[in-house]
Image 1 (cartoon, helix red, strand yellow):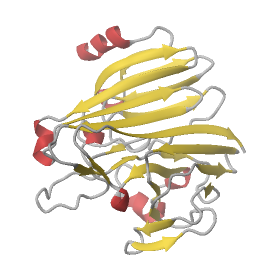
Image 2 (cartoon, one colour):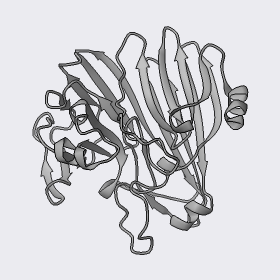
Image 3 (cartoon, rainbow, N blue to C red):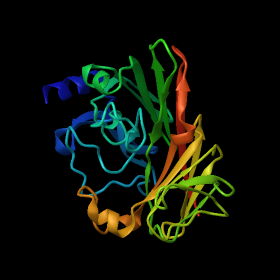
Length: 303
């Protein structure tokens, strides 16, 4: 608690930003800028858990069953997957955590700044003994989040290895929807995708994406903007990507939701993941000392 009080004393912006002890006594940055937006980001995983433009409904989905533990990821919001996506394909490191280590590490606050139209938070993560034991790469990772009428998230990676480093990454965004069976996702028609629910077979997308069963797809070579049309909430969620060549679409449906202890049995109709990613065939291979920035820009509009 004394550490949180110290962070609040250093970084709080009166009337707009505070650093608080939140769920599970995890430190979080709470944003509430009247006339603009509210939002929350946890230092645990640099994890954005809420963003609500003034006059709109909450845009991000968060499970009521999330465990809020230091060694567990938060279920919902925007987990960061890095430096691999999904289960790691490695016999050398058989106990590697799902989706990498970034989403369960404590991040450091670098800066919090305010403008008339936004609040920007910059968090950082560097290699330490625990990361080197899993992934022996000296690195710096930064997550810059701008809360405004839009939500802008930029993930910047640099490394000091002497050879090119392959890695995967994702901003694993969970969106709140009225009923996932009613939404349509546009912007992916014509794309080829890996269907992880059908033995990883590759298929072609024809028209809008709709959800009528468990869905776990990696859309390849996709850089265009994506729109989620939600007739129940009567809104569109517009997603733009930068330096991201893959898009992941996921909903666990009934059986998988019941099998996950941090996911409520009846929560699946009200969430949809549309993820900005570089994964699988679209993984990145980054030269030494070369920066890489992957970004997502999210906006909402009436349907």
